Image (spheres, rainbow, N blue to C red):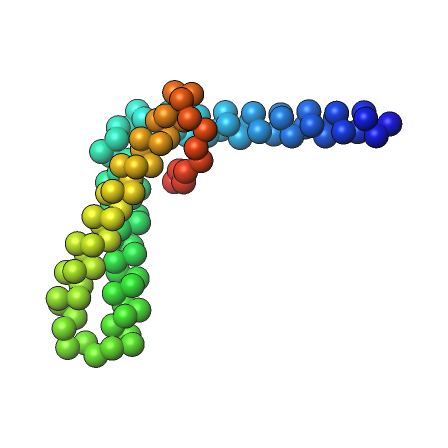
Length: 111
């Protein structure tokens, strides 16, 4: 009986994994339709880069004086979106390899 239970458990896991992969492929297909630049700018530069820049700017400024706030904001708005662009490019390439079946890598996909 244990063997039947193990087999059923493995089958359920495989079915769950297949559904997860199919869902990911459907979501990634939608990103592909909009294009690489759209994916990078929207998901990584804007959502990640600008958000992180503002959150960390506000956090840092709350601990320090507001004397050089303009400079600090400009630096944050350069560094974090740039890092977001780089991360987005790397993620796009990795997800494309995964989509084409060349690599099994799991990266974040924002929806």
